[in-house]
Structure formats: structure tokens, C-alpha cells
Length: 340
Image 1 (cartoon, rainbow, N blue to C red):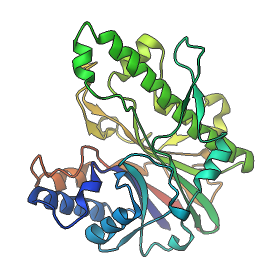
Image 2: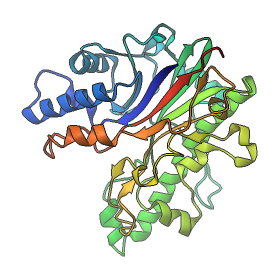
Image 3: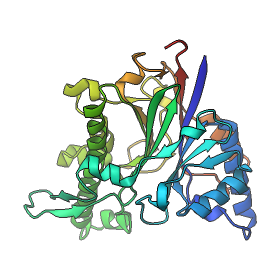
Image 4: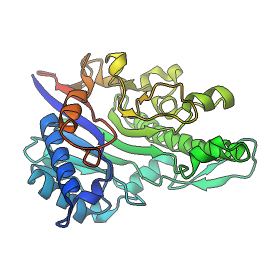
């Protein structure tokens, strides 16, 4: 029985580690990242916070992996991503389905979801504002044993982070912090809805699409506070879908994973300091057809994990300036059904 390993990892500031002028800490960190990925050994790796050009990701593949992984590139250099933190899919160079790998054109995404931009209304405000993906999701498409499989790589994160903690602790600015945080969350919620629009569109074309969505979905500080006080719910709730449309509802790779290990970052929440700092920000979700043996590809029970062992072992030998990332990788094993 053949399996495929899929991993998502937010590799903090990976763009700073390509080049020939690295200092000792950067070299040690680069080597740690290489060891961590090669030990995990994913067939498909979604890199979040990757470098912002094809030349730079090629340098990563050459310098870190000696070309054991290749980046899947868009036609005409069209990724639709702004800023320095890009989303990349790296695939093993000896992966048997590599020749079929391609990225969905961004224009196809726009056509399926109603356009590049969409309207956003803040609480109680009739005046709509325009919004768009700062980090346009990237969709890897593979043909595996005659089955088309899609992998949507996403990075949803509030851009409102500057001076947040000092604003929250300042009674004169606390209301401003709450208002700006709510605005940021509304924008992110519409980004999640836009992703759902793409998935829903695929259901109008195929009753059993094989779709994964993976990456970093960061609601920002005070997740439960904003849910309880302002009836504003999280990114995962928006992405997973409507339980009343159960056939479109997404499963989670860590649903049956040990609860005390189901976390990927250790961030102290200044809004809710009583909240445990172990938070799950990195996710892999997938459509129902991938668990009910209706497709060539199946996700079996207990197939998902957070790569605690590998990450902790590699980082145990690195100092605080050399740590591979502040996020831990998440993986899931896909099984190819023999005789399907």
C-alpha cells in the first residue's frame, strides 16, 4: 500500500537564509531547517513565509536541499502575492507524480470566486470597503493514479500587530485596539469565506472533489475574548463550512490526534494571559470524499500529527538565535487505495 506524506510548515523568515553572506547563527539555523525537513521527509511540503521570488526559492532548493526538492511554479510568474512572505509548494524531485504538478492560475481563482476584490462591511457600517488577499492562496494540482487532487496553501494572518500589547494595556487606547482588532478579524473572515467560495465552486463541478487546504490560520491575540464578547468566530469555523451542508464540511487532520499534543506554537496571549500558551495555528483540512473510500486517495484514521519529536530534537541543539521556526510542522499521510 503506497502512501504520500503531506506537510505544512511556517518557516519563520526563510527568505533571509538564502545567499552566501550568512552569519554563524543563520548558517546553524539553515542547517537545522534542512535537517528538520529531510528527517520529516514529506513528499509534498507547503512552505509558509517563504521567499518572495522564484530565484530565491530556487536558491533554497539548491542550498538547503541540494535539489532534492523542487518548487512548483506558476505560469508567467503570476502568484498574486504581495509582501515578502510567499506561499510555496515544494515536491520531492523523485516524487512519482511530479510531472503532473502545476499551480492553478490566479485568474481561474478570481473567476471561480467572483473577482480579485470583494466588499467588506465593518460592524454596523453601511459603507462597504474593498478587500483582497494580501497573500493570494496558491493551489497545487496533482494527478495521482488518475485522480486529480488539489492542495490549497493559505496564510491568513492579521496585519494589525504593531503596538497591540501596549494599546491593550493602556486604558486610553484599549477601545482603539479592540476596534482595529475587530476590523482585522472581519477582513480575515472574508478571506476565509473567499476560500470557501472556491471550494463550493468545485462542488458545482464535481460532487466528490479531492481538496486539501493547509497552512497558517492565525486569528491573532484574544481569540476567545472576541468570540465571547463580540460574537465573532474564528477562521477555522469559516473555512470548515456549514454543518447543514455536511457533504461540503471539511475534516481536520488532527481531529483524532491526542488533545494535549494538538498545538503548533507557544505564544503567550496578552489579551487572555490565563489561556494556555500552546495554540494550534497550523492546519490541514480536507473534503469528505477523502475519508469515505470513494476516491483513489484516502486519509485513514490517525494519519495526522504535529511533528513534535523531530522539531524538538533538532532545536534542542540550537540556541535561541538559531531556532528553526516558532511554528511546528503539521503532517498527514495519504494512502493510495490499491485496486480502487
